[in-house]
Amino acid sequence: MKVYPKIPRYDHPVVPSSFFERDDLTLLEKFDGSAFRFTLYDERDTGAYPEPVVDAADGDGSLVFGTRQTIRGSHRDSLATVDGALHRAVRCLRAGIDRDALRAAHDEFNGPLIVYAENLVYSTLDYGYGDTPLPVLVGFDVLPYAEIETMTPPGNPYEETFEGFLGREAAWDLFERIALSAPPELSFVPATVLEHPSRGFDPDTYTVPHSSLADAVRAEGVVIRSDEAGRRVKCVRERFEELNREQFGTPPSAAESGAEYVVATYCTAARIRKQVRSMVVEEGREFGLHLNDDLYPRVVEDIWAEHWPELMQLDVSFTPADVYPLVAKRCITELRTMQTNAELNDADPTTLWRHLE
Image (cartoon, rainbow, N blue to C red; front, side, top):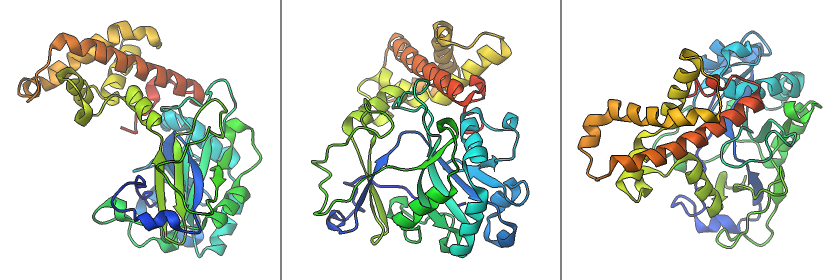
């Protein structure tokens, strides 16, 4: 199941300036969640699927799903075997997708299709999780298997185009056909079409609107799409990028001090979650934000234990005491994210992203 091509920023060198003067531009809301894709396993076209899809399918009619890089399973799998961060998405596949309609579409497009969607889990923007009924999966692109020439793009991934993908109208028509009537917490919806610029588009002066999911929340950004050019280009607002750094930490390249560099490099979400699981699963402690009092010192200790030789040879200087408050901030943010997504997916917080790291 082909990995979705990378979408370059509007100012990336691979994007020609003439792109923004095209007559067929469409602006779509860019949603903040997690990458998701699915395909219907149709025994009539077994030879069209890559081996991982065939292995994951549980018989004809299985909806095989995956995250950005990896196939994760089938909608028929027990939730006990599915990563907790994907429980809501799998429930949506079961109750919100019309498999018969998707199978019928295979006849129209010369074989099976890959549907690309955003899995609305809490990442950086809070659309009102826990307060407002929100859709689960937001569809934004469709690719027929018949158009796949290679499963891995060669060279610079940003040079890969979107040739072969269904046109915007055809894709949205498919989304409408395969979406079953379901309550929001089980629903699949198409991405919001914001506008069709008639006289070109200037990303430098464009103001990102509020999200279609929440009136009080500005959208992450927009995706500018041209089917004739076979391109997608993104424009993300600066404030979102700032919020993203606050949520997930400053990247090492942007660190302004030695302590920030150490935390950015070694205090990963995976390291924090590992310690949380140890505290909850192995020590029997109750999950909650209160864990942070003991969590952040343990994370710092784990960093020292594993990376002491590297830390001693860093080209940047730092004061160990300055690392602690930065790690504490990262840990409490991660705990809040785990708590929100556990409630959203009705899952044990220690199972979140367990198999996604």
